[in-house]
Image (cartoon, rainbow, N blue to C red; front, side, top):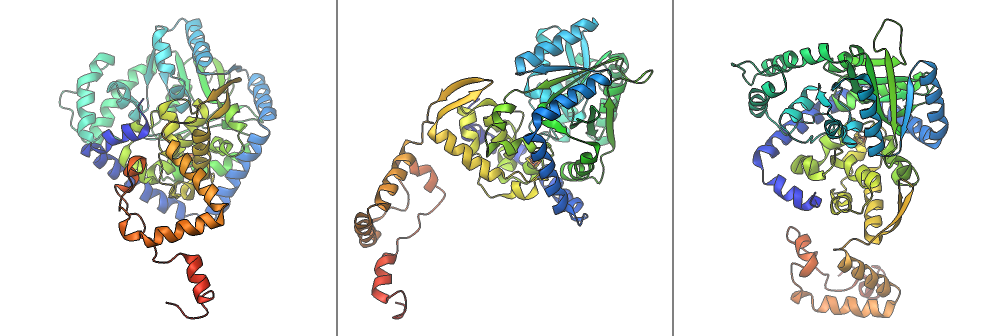
Length: 485
Ligand code: SF4
C-alpha cells in the first residue's frame, strides 16, 4: 500500500466516491445524534463502558482463563492463536476435519484482519460472505471501506451492475429484470444466499462480545443472516480478538444500549444472537472458539495506545471524521479505516511500513471522533503519541519479537526545526535578537515556506509578524500600564 497521503490524493479526485461517502456518512451521523440524544444518561453509559473495558483489559489474563473454562464447560473447544497465520491454519484444519469445502460467514472484522477468506481459498475452501454489504464487496472483488457498511463507497446503480454481472458465477443468478430499487436488490441477495444457508455444514463468525462468567458469545446484526449462520450449520467456528471480553452479563447491559445507537442509530438492533457452547438438539453440534492475539498484547503494553482496545467497532468515529468523509476507507490500507484504523493498525502491525507510519497523520486532530466514541477513546491523544513513535523510531516488540524501527523519513526538517527552537529557547539573548531581526525584516518575509514546508503553506498563510516583539512591548509599556500603542 502507498502511504495515506498518496492513496487519499487519488481517492479525493473520484467525485462519485466523494458523493457516495458524503451522502452516507451525513445520513448515519445525523440519525446517530438523534438516537443518542434520546438517552438522558448517555454520558454515564459512556463512562461505564470506558470503565468496564479498562477494568477488563487490566485483568485480561484472568478473564481469558475464566472464559476458556466456561466455554469448555459448555461443550466448546478453545484454540489460541498468536498471529494471523496460526489462526488461519487452525480454522482451515477445523474445516478440513469436517470434510467440507465451503463455509458461510457472518460479518466479522477479526476474520478480515487475518485474511481468513484468502487463507481458506488457498486450502481449497470457499468462504461465502452472507452480510449484504460484505456480499457486494465479495462479488465485486473489492475491498471493504467501512467497519459497519463495507460497501459504503458503492451506490445502488453500481450494486445492481455487480449483482447482474457476478451472481451467476457464485450460485443463483440475479433476476434478469433486476432494478436498483433497494427492495429488489435485497430480494436478489436473499434468494442468492438462501441456498447457501441451507447447504452449508460449517459456519464462521466473529463476536461483538464474549462473557467470561458463562462463556457466552454475542453477535449484534440487522439482517438475520448472522442468526442463520450461527444456528443452521453443524459446526460453528468463531474467531474473536482477545479484547472482546466482558466479565459478566450485567456488563452487557451497557454495551447493548450504546453499540446500536452509535452504529446504526437504532434503539436496539433487530437481531441479538447469543450462544453458550453447544445445546442438545438445538444449533451446531460442535463449537470452536479461536482467540486471536495478532498484536493485541503488544498494544496492551503501551500505556497511552492501549485505550484503542476498548473499541466496540461501532464506526461512529468514521462517520463523523472529515478526513474519512473525503478520502474514503481504502486509503487507510487496512480493514480498520477512519480514526480507529489510524490508531489501531499502526499498533497491531507496527509502524515499520510506509502506510502504517503515515496513518497517525491521517487526521486533522479536530477531536470529533473522541466526542462521539461510546467508550471515550481519546483518539487525538493516541494519534499524537503514535506520531512521536513514528518520528523517534526505536525498539518495538511485535509478537514477542523485538525489532528496531528507523525514525521515519521526511521528518528530518521538522526534527531540525524543533532542535533549533529548543536551543533558542534556552538562550534568551539569541532568542531576543532573533525576534527583533524577524520583526524588522517582516516586509521581506515570504507568504509561503520553501522546501518541506511548501505543502503545508500551499493552503495556509503564514501568520504576519508583529512590528515589535512582545518582550520589547512589555518593557516599553511597563506591562501595558503606560497605555497601549
Ligand atoms: S473508536 Fe470509538 S467511535 Fe470509533 S469505532 Fe471504536 S468504539 Fe466506535
